[in-house]
Amino acid sequence: MKKILIIHNNYKIKGGEDTNISEEVKLLEKEYTVDTLFFNNHERIDLFDFISFIFGRYFKSDKQIINKIKKF
Image (tube, rainbow, N blue to C red; front, side, top):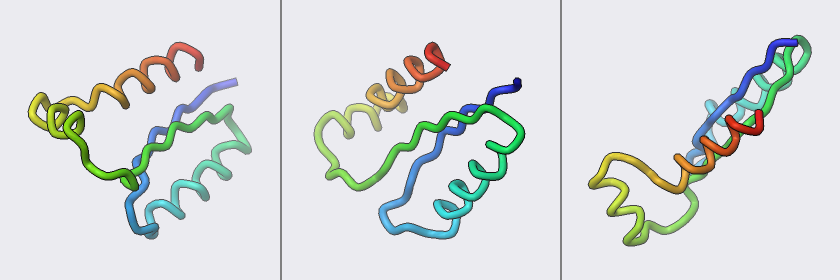
């Protein structure tokens, strides 16, 4: 069976796209093996976030994505 990994960033205020993603996952699960990785913007910005912004990479999420892909 084909597998799909969906990576999505939820917004601070839930909107149409966030709802759309959950509906799309349900639809895709009918035909595929689906796994998800969701990030959110609910946390306060700290020094680590600022450093990540300067380097153009968010190291926390990079590590989570790499681990998820390895497992998937």
